[in-house]
Length: 485
Ligand code: SAH
Ligand code: SF4
Ligand code: F3S
Image (cartoon, rainbow, N blue to C red; front, side, top):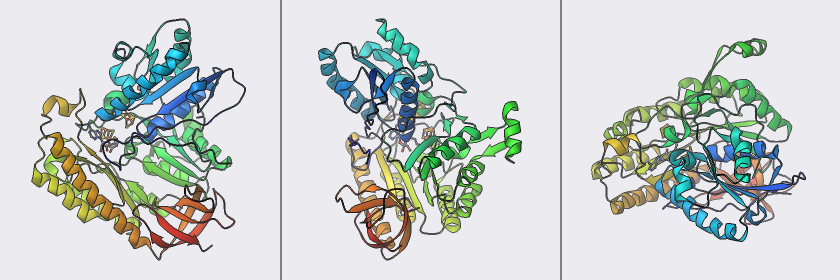
């Protein structure tokens, strides 16, 4: 049976935004006496962290529930990336407040980036909150929960330089049993001027490759057929052997320093039927080695998410992104040269960054025309307190202008997504089946290596199978076809 539980999409001012999606957990019934309900906002890192949180609390006697009314403990795993993301959580808290009035013993905790950004202030601002835990404090949750049970409020927002939760086996939540997320690193050292992540997630650190491989292998053995390796900047993944791991690495023939390209190859080597994806790449750091590793292994999916943010070099400099428009275009050429023109490419774009002129906005539109992305997440700039941009630059573009520029970007992207889909009609693709199509019992859906969703009649196939599908038509967002083998 499918374990799919409805996702509630909370959009952030434009329809292509899904960074604020809320996920509910599936029900777990291992006979534990208490119930944990958790909602995740923001990026995939948060979804992945919620699985670690569920694992830590399972050991403390909590089963997960998808019904908030059953919960003894309610966690919101929050995002601070834009003001809207935080407002969404605050609105949710007012709804939860009504529940808590009926059930005062229910504990309410805020996890994740908003917890880290606001720390103890959250307890003052939101009276309903009992517990605040930042992204590096999840091992401490059992103690924090005990503290709340004893009648106190509890806070831990300590940021670590080492924590990677490497030894914790995540409880797979909201899983289709085919695809899974694996965190390979935490934090970010980049300091893009608009971004709150370095403040909420702390310093960058890489997880040891041994535990990543073990987790991927275990997933494959359990029937999963695709893993997505997660980090804010996967290209700067780097792990050097410490004394106690040297032996293991020597035994496996792994060199003392493991780069992202090495890691990709190691995970791809687990089994040819295990697909490997990754997110997010950074234009200044993505190397030819990574592209060659992708080309070498059929099971490393030919899709890159490479956020551009702006098509104008002056704005990119102010954003502290570390690359120019020309550099980005040159990386895209290299990628298409090595991986072929059909490889998938998606991006993130911000409109209306500080001092952006109409001409500079046009540069973003013209870059989109040059590249033709398959897909994009698009936002208008939202100033975040404490960031370099907030300190150095005035947030001086009117909201109306930011929104109008965003609309222009969205309209163009919609056209390009449609165009890229049309180019796939008539071609055949290897597709990994992820489940039943939402619209029909008799149809399945899966993804191509380039990350396009394809819908087709199910015949005798099931999720987890690989099939070859010929694409016969498409909509703006989906390919439609039939199985040829
Ligand atoms: N680590 C990734 C992205 C992390 S955040 C990277 O380096 O690209 C996801 C996206 O949110 C960013 O790519 C950016 O487009 C957007 N974003 C981040 N901060 C923002 C802000 N202050 N206002 C609007 N969008 C923002
Ligand atoms: Fe933020 Fe930049 Fe780090 Fe991405 S790379 S998380 S945008 S600071
Ligand atoms: Fe949001 Fe934190 Fe991710 S700010 S985008 S949840 S790293």
